[in-house]
Length: 195
Image (tube, rainbow, N blue to C red):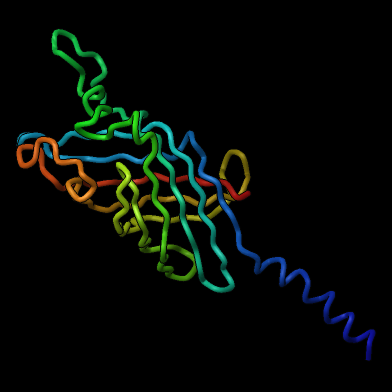
């Protein structure tokens, strides 16, 4: 009887190990948050943050997942860094207290509170965005999600795209409203290697 019990425990061990939560760390070279906003009702300005870190955790057995992202606000880049004859370039203005105030608030963060899954793939991530010292709820729609071995490195990875919309005034960023709209669209392109 004891041998049979021990044999059953040994057989169950690999299944228990397979059911453990899996952690994925964002690849900094292929992960970036970006955004778009109307500019005086004429065009759409797009920009990105060049430096961010993050982690995605999924427990396939319990169908639970979580996401954390940290973005360095000073890494903002809209392609306008040369002021020329102007008093300042747009990216310089975005870094000051009118917008991201990067000296006082060098990071913005997003931490999930709930992740909806379709099978093993996230479809919606609800969480809290902290920007300019203010924390507000934000929901991201996952537009695409794939888990597979990377074709070059052969390492397991997950990744995809997510998007959401926020009102910058809710975080205290009121400069230029309404000429520069309150609503800002936020996007994430993510690739994450399994730890």
